[in-house]
Image (cartoon, rainbow, N blue to C red):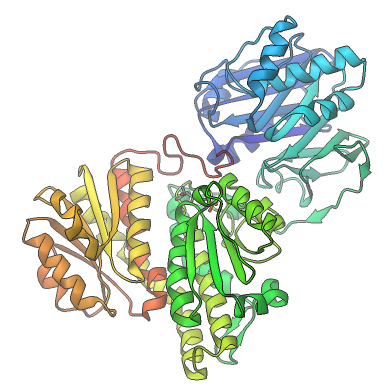
Length: 612
Ligand code: M6R
């Protein structure tokens, strides 16, 4: 949550920062601001609303300066308005800060500073940090670098910060703990951002800052120190990220682009790992710890949101194929439950962003109890990727739409490969079954491509139901997590209330909601519970509910009962979620779009949830 960008070099900082903030807007979009420093002092511009509002506000103003910091906010402390927007100034207005994260002890620090005569201009926790740094510098007559370090030893919480000083415009000081920060290394210039997307247009050489590291950046060079002031060596990595991957490429929205990218992104998740013809299936990242999975007494999956739904799909096939008991936990609940982790348990942590605070904290807790962590992550170099003992990237590429789509299918693809490898090694599936699974998984990108042809039909159904006030999504077996995911997609981007349920649970309560106004989406592909789900559809029809059914191609029965039908290609039950979710993503997208909602940046949400 919140995106930060900073620049120090020879170019005009404002343009680089503004463009970077637009790229990071998926992280927060309720207000934004930029501070610039040069020999004439600090210039500060802040505005409630989108980055475009800041751009409009600064038109015609003095935006010169080759050092600057910028921020796009997702409000935690204090409502979204101009004064709470970052950057925040110190008492004497010579220092400015941008901050992503939460300072837990801000209120006691603030009180101490108020007692010393400090006056605050905002309601934020972040402003307290810069006043605190200023106070330390004044009292100790020390350098800014030392003041930042001393302040951080007293601060409790999560942060990625960048500080700028009007009296030393050739200096940026950055630090992180729990919130991401990447430093792009150019020739006599440096770019800082919450992820690499604002940086790649200028350089692909980056340093991922570690927790408790402080970066002292001048045109002449970058120095890293730990919180004990001991100098460390920056590890410069070359990142492989194309500009095309972070642009809309002709689509109206990132979400639609990402839905359409799925044949490729699922293919990328398997590239170099799976070759059905030769029976090759290897995930290099987990090879060394594979035996821990094979001999696991229990697998605990930790995730949030859509990643949690991918975990539920994995529960079905890990139990089904590998015969290992699986528990899928909301990371946020796990971490506060004093959970039991025994020797022989293995944790799989799933996250698109790799920065979700609840998942990170749950991982740390599990690690402290001696667990081994397998990470299934999209964002390369992210905190979860780095804190996991071992893992497999899903290689979906940057996902910018706040509603997760291609990450879900790539997660399911990678988790299914893990299950296949483990089941084969454990001997819980036959050689023939193993080969069938490989062949079928390899055909999935083509099937997803076919499912995408449901675009027009999904849009027509969206036209019919765009004004509905509630939706119910029902599925059984492997399609139950898909029902949950369909409902989440719809509610987060269209603001229509939607619930996902196992279809058989309907009669235990939700059936009371059904009347002629209620659209019910059944994920009713031809699988082991096909006959049962037909009975559930009949129960809805008997109460005049409107049925939208996702069925398998060639189904002749359900189309005679349902009001609307979307046909997806045939595949095995275990892989059906990869295909059956596609029309649900399209349906949500079109409903939200027809309702005039901001599909890529839905209200109150942010892509990367780095707060509890
Ligand atoms: O980055 P993560 O996968 O850890 O994020 C987890 C959830 O915050 C995320 O899936 C969220 O639910 C999405 N908005 C769903 O579309």
